[in-house]
Image 1 (cartoon, rainbow, N blue to C red):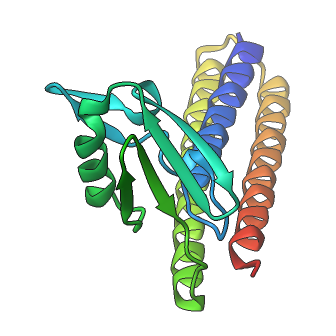
Image 2 (image 1 turned 30 degrees about the vertical axis):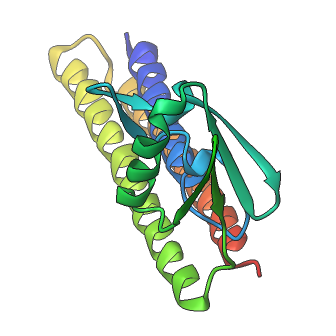
Length: 185
């Protein structure tokens, strides 16, 4: 039972780190990336649909994203969705393609993005610590119920702390790499 608690905790901690990584992909750096717009939702005939299900998204140049919808009737709604989003880019519609030009980031904007990276890192750390707390409570409950000896409970708690430390180190490493990528000119 205790190994299940540790395995479940490690799996949940890993999902928290994966969610943070996905959020990092949506952050704008100095380069064009399809992940900036893939998860945008567009009102497609009354249904909120992810952009990557409505169009092909490509990066023809290092500072440009091209969005070519499969249905031309959705061009204007894609344009409106991009304008409403928080990515801060103005779409250029030319016939059948929506183009997003990625301007170089200003120093102030880079610092704002780094702040959001730090905020997301802290959210991930909190998620990891919450998982650790829940696993700790489960292990202590098993010890109180008598299904787990005191020595074994201490070993399991130590193992849980090692897993937590490793996952927090992963969060710090990934966040540091993203911060470095954002600050790169």
